[in-house]
Length: 287
Image (cartoon, rainbow, N blue to C red; front, side, top):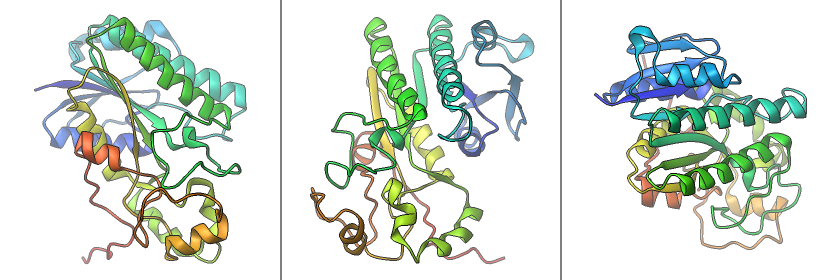
């Protein structure tokens, strides 16, 4: 049974990731400041801002042990505007460095981490260069949070240069949603500007977890990043109407469906085999 450490395992996305990996046969150890283990998971309380604690957790903690085959790094202050800018930057940057450096020193050679859609230029007060946006243009961080995510991507590239056997996969997650969050979506429909900030994107946490599992299975060495979003937008209005209202001068790089995501997931589909299964448009399950 392969063994994986998941930081931020008690977070919104982390809970889905733990369930997905347990179902897939992984031995999951959660590393979290507020460890709340789920079925099939063991958990260790760790302050990831402390390198010694981070290295100790990844090297082995009593009966939990070490010997990790992979690390999934999700722990972070999860968005801009929640804490003072310097706190967000220093906290997230230190946690990222500590986890990656400790993992490499502990012999781990597969690391998957949560990057962010924000590196694409959110909140798009400056229009994107084209739509659908993809991984081909340089990051455009517009917040301290996004700047940290951008620097983490560069850190991954340099760590992989130092360690040619290392695989690091960054997943640029869109706005993570639980199924119960979909009840809020009807209130967004009257004004396209309400969700213009991320091109009306989102990611169902269950599909986000699938993307993590597939990233752990990715075999190529080196650092790579992928946009991870749901296959549709949060809007009932068609894309043509949304773009005409909010981004009339932005080039459309390829035809898109009426409600197809404008955060391109083509690369993730092609290289990871990412196949999102859930949409807010799905009928509510019957009891």
